Each structure stands twice: as structure tokens, then as C-alpha cells.
Image 1 (cartoon, rainbow, N blue to C red):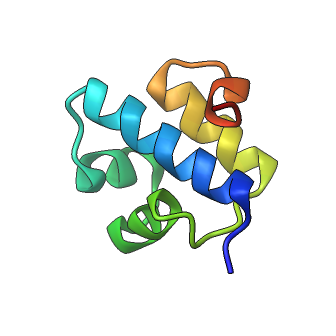
Image 2 (cartoon, one colour):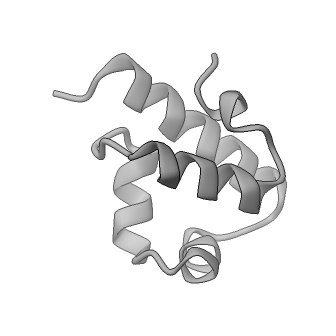
Length: 70
């Protein structure tokens, strides 16, 4: 079962990605991730490392803490 933090990160990731007009496929390709992996992160099914959170935040142009807060 996903943790509340995983769900928050996934929701915030999707928010920022769509705000930038990026598809899951575009963002995944930019980061060297597989599209299905990114989709599972957005659904809160994956437990990310801090390095991955930092990498995602950098590509989205946000502070990593922005992905961890409601």
C-alpha cells in the first residue's frame, strides 16, 4: 500500500509536469526513466530515492521540498 508521502509526491509531480506542458513520455525521456515507471510514480506506487526526487525537481524547475509538501 502506498504511503501518504508517495501519493503527495506523485500528485505534485503530475501538477508540475502538466503545468510545463510535458507528457509523461517527454519527462521520462529527459530523465532517462521509462514512461511506465514515471506513471507509477505519479500514481504513488513507487518509493523514490532522495536522489530521484532531487533529479525530478531539478528538471521541473522547483525546489525538491515542493514535491514533498501538500
